[in-house]
Length: 303
Image 1 (cartoon, rainbow, N blue to C red):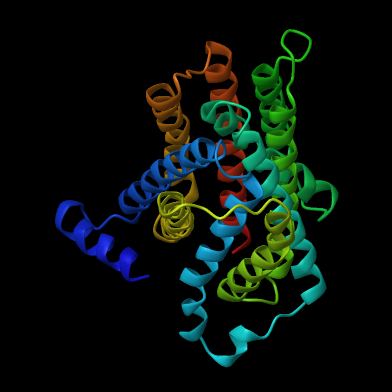
Image 2: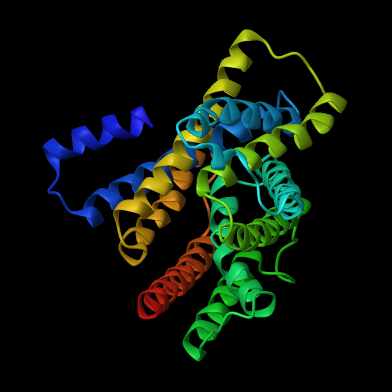
């Protein structure tokens, strides 16, 4: 949290005191961090198994975020609905592992474009499972987002690889995890959810890591440490962005993840997404942005 405070102090000098301006900058920073981190995972996956990478990532995130719990009251240590918390963590670990596997197989930009569809699957799940009211406009946005996903995949025109299917499965699992967080947030603080999720992530990823364990070199350990630090910092930046600005104002800057992923992929891996990935990714993002915007509008109307 001191890092976030330091960034805010710098913003006081260079930006107006606009929540949306600062939120947009934090979202842009989170996008850059995510693109660099995922590129690092793709690079390191050729040397270390993705299960071990995920374990180190989870361990470092846990060690960095757990001090937050000590700043809270005793109530933060109590977890309501522990069974659902565990199921949510299983879905989250599954999403992380399948995404890392996908990153080891497909270009970072392609994986990034497909990852935007998490919001779409979350909206579908919210309507079916949580019985949330979804109007005709949001259903239209959902259908548009699914069309964008199909454009990226282009089944029947190109072979849909195991890596691509793994990324798609990851987005569905993340959507399920998000829906469970919505339920957990009714009875638990965000700090409690983050703490127990991090703890379960660490525990659940350990058996997979041990099965494929290889002791990393000091250089590789440095890269693993960097991945964990970037994961924690990215989470904090995203949270701070949504805290400072309106979702409809800051979410468009999340699309820069695709731009950064494409640039890094081209420079380090000689990969560049084709025109259909850009078109499909843009369609998916517009869909997710509208869904997020409508949720914010409905929330304000209720309040």
